[in-house]
Image (tube, rainbow, N blue to C red):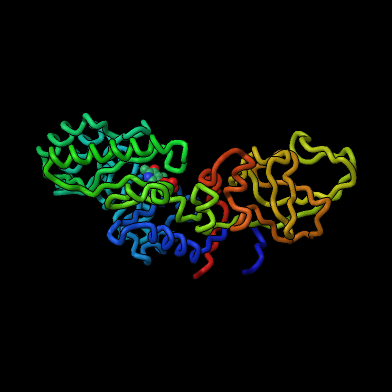
Length: 369
Ligand SMILES: *Cc1c(COP(=O)(O)O)cnc(C)c1O
């Protein structure tokens, strides 16, 4: 592949296909696969990712917010889209764009029914979210009675699925809690089915749930990070391929003498005759200031170049004293070898945050299959 001559996020669609097939191989043939493409498909471009997954016959998409769903519909995506965290103010447009809401509280249920009635809907698909321990969004088990009686008074909505979300599916130390959540979810589903007389789809697992809790796949699984190449464990990372590589280029090289400083607020002081390279990527592109002052590094011609001084909005400076390189050479911030997850460790964060922080200003380039 050609060397980067500017800052780009390279997306490898064949790695996406690989990850999809790998995760799918963990499922029963009848289990449905929902791809989570929220936050710009974890930074990689939701439209291109959704188009690719739609070709692979994905069953469902999920986004967090309504605008993210609208962007997919505008791009011609026809697969059903679950909106995980809609706000009632947007319900009209949600219905107009055939997006399916997660209904997570009595208030949201009533608001949605009001809007659906006003728009003369019939059997509009909704997904009921239950809180089984995360305490973020969702009904409680003892709300079932109210939900069912509310639903029985109207024909504008139809419950397509019931779902919940695991708190710590990647964490072996929390095995007991995950099992407790699975049991709570089963109880909720049973009571809901008994009281309502309907049998909606059930789904609980995110990527780590898919891997660690095969007994809890139910009718569908919801995977995000796994599709993008991370399994939240060293073992699973081997089976997946990171789809995104963040690359840049050396804009300028400086030679500095002992005592000279680099960057804003003179945060780095040269220890001798040193060489620095300026790279066109900064905190406005998603390289947090935490990586400054030698907490993070980039790779140039296979060698580690620490980020020195403070990260600027549009640039970083790195120490290349011991690296044989020239202006115009490629810079790797992360790729399939030194991954976003490795970079994340130096800032005590996780791959999810690195990937989703890469701003829209960074050009996305797609490697075809
Ligand atoms: C983001 C999200 C997912 C995807 O989780 P991954 O760990 O990325 O697979 C699944 N379900 C819900 C409710 C989410 O918010």
